[in-house]
Amino acid sequence: MINDSRQSYGAVSKFLHWGMALLVGWQLLKLGDRIAEGEHWVGQTLVPFHVSIGSLLLVLIVIRLLWVASQLGHRPEQDPALAKLVKAGHGLLYLALLLMPITGMLYMVGNGYGVSAFGLEIFAKGDEIPWAATLGQLHSPLAWTLTVLILGHIGMALIHHFVKRDDSLKRML
Image 1 (cartoon, rainbow, N blue to C red):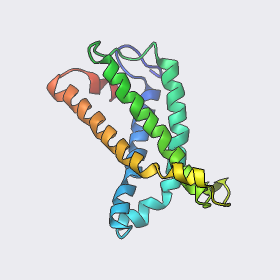
Image 2: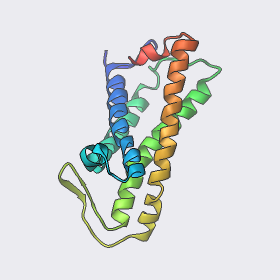
Image 3: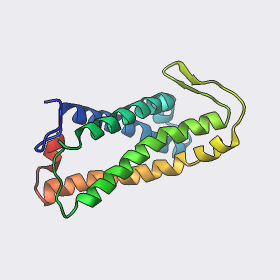
């Protein structure tokens, strides 16, 4: 089933969720690269694709937001007591996922580097743009915020599965 239903998420939602989870996990390896200053296999092997994967994630989060909007009346129901918290948590995750590649691009463009993804030039190298560089400085703290949100998301999924013993996790598998 492609579309979401009241009982389960559909194939598109699952593909976007797990595909983006894998790519975001790859992106968050950059935090380890930053801590160890690129002196390990992550910095040498995976990080060179950081901008390209970030650009892909920007496209995917826009698609995901459009898909979520098209499925609002069909998605699995939440516990009414927690529905507002669930919506707030997911809203913050979506916002952080949207802002991460935008702030990354602002950093690159603002510092005159330009942006290329998978060998395609998106923004050419040019003069520094101070306001863009300033907004781009939010990229790193936002990465830590996104990490906390993701850990909270995973934690809640595990609580639903192992403590509440409901089908929340199963609906996304």
